[in-house]
Image (tube, one colour):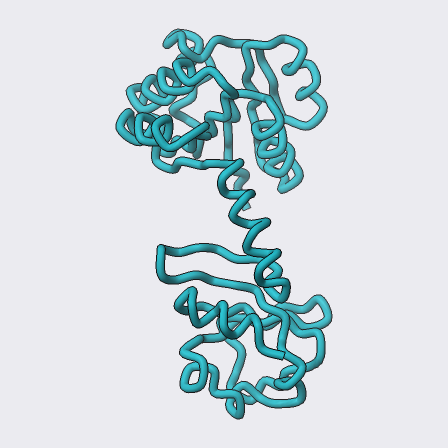
Length: 218
């Protein structure tokens, strides 16, 4: 499979984490920061790393940013540099720009200047921690909208030993099982005859309220 090319601008904690994960997935990663020390540290886990001021158009042109599959703007507390960088990236023809926002207002401006995906690391992590505390049986979740979500939920003990047909999740809980993880093996689109075992994880899609009720079953 052809490797994808990513550029990560801003090598603070968030940018470094993103760059490391992409590198571990065997993708090509260019790390950019205005701080020479951060760039030197990043050289250990990115394909290439360089010192550059990404608010300068010529600096972005020189690295051929428009050729990357996506550019992640993870600049820290300098909102002005973050916004200008996103604006320049879109003007230079970058197809997908993902930008870190410090707050709602910052995110709105990033959206207006062309960012394709806005990330709020602190807010999102806070929501994830609170969700985990309130619903301990939920190991992971992806919020699709204000009403719907995909959640990985530990199977209630009362359901072990039964098949999906017997449980009839759609009729009884208004939920759909899109995958089951059992003993480290993931079965996507499980058949109605799939038996649920103790410790299995159900990947369910449905209304957030229905998922919350299901996660509290014994």
